[in-house]
Length: 147
Image (tube, rainbow, N blue to C red; front, side, top):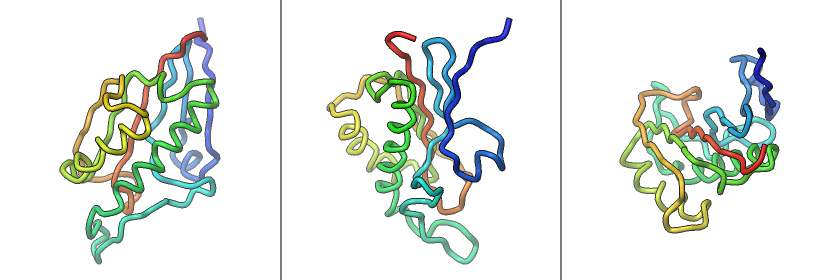
């Protein structure tokens, strides 16, 4: 018995290169792949400045990247009739946990429009993301009220 899936993509180049969907709905659950700070053309928003070895010089653009990442997640959720209110879990992957922790609380409270967002949250430090200029990536899981 095949499971029915609804999928959505942005149409950015790396979807075909890597071979994946940005979001998948199965029954009443929507899974968002790792989101990053790109615009509608696939250009990174607030890319980190890199040193000669291709590593970020600093993490000052993390907040701007995080805001765009949430905006992209909101756009995907809308395709399923969902909002951030439907998110039950998110995982933030960051090159620098301290820098992420410094801005994530502020940004999350603003985008979820509450002092205590009603979702489980994970913050995981990692050594590398898909693009060298990328400082963070966030995955989301949402449960729809009715599917």
